[in-house]
Length: 224
Image 1 (cartoon, helix red, strand yellow):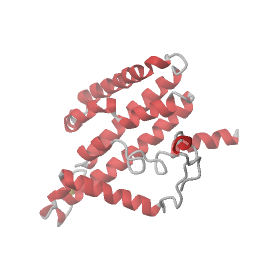
Image 2: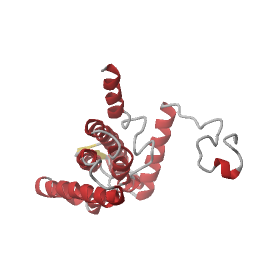
Image 3: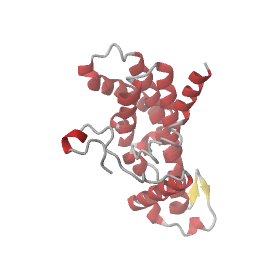
């Protein structure tokens, strides 16, 4: 029982830092760079993606033994697109300002590699509870990354944050940070900081062990 509980906790927390979809796995770069000119946009996109990720993971996991393997990709797309349409209607009806700010990038959640990747690699192979926790963890990690990026870019590039004016910076904003180049720079700095804090280092040795082409190239798993 304890082992099962620890496993579920691991599924929930892995996406926040260790396997953060944006800062570690470098997925979802399009919305990450496009909508994070403001912190609120980052929160909105992150929560919308989490909603779609959670709904699609649950449905795909529940139907994983029913969906034929030959049509699993089209089936996943239909399921994901259904949740994207639903969240689009909800945002347009209740938060029209945010809906307009996210624009086409909200619709593009359908082809977000984070969502499709979790559906293919996790939800289609695991139970509903584990898949739901995986979705929540990945969604939280994605939301944190977008909120952090949006906050930095909004504060430095516009001199304000969540509707609050930042003294001094507001009168001398660095407009570069709300432009595409500023997005790349901010993302690079955050990734570098995360790697430094996690003390992530490149492997000292590279092995062919497990490579399907090891025998063909004649290395037999001993190359370095």
